[in-house]
Length: 151
Image (tube, rainbow, N blue to C red; front, side):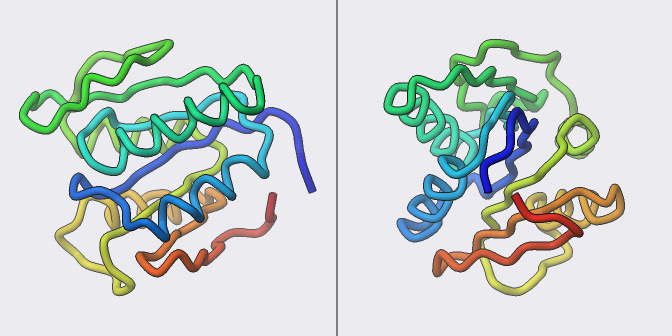
């Protein structure tokens, strides 16, 4: 069911998504009416997701506002061309701000198993605490939905 105008937050590893994760992400994001797309402006998964959303905008001619939540540390910044680029913050603070601002989170963790010292899994855990609808796309492309409602 296609619903109008969601604010979608995204989290993933700086090592990038697998091919299967990219395929599943694109199918998921094109099945949703996205009003705003939020990401952490890092190399790897954030940049890949940013580029896939831009591809969707071109193909579907949708107007999606892309908002970057950059980290203070420039070493892993992707410097994506966003419609809005927020003030850089520490990783934990910017990830929490992104979850707070999102209605739905999409995550592409680097592993099937939850890891304690992982920014992606930490963001997923925070999204759970905030009762967000979460779509976790595992490296094999399978999607696990957490939360009450599905898109």
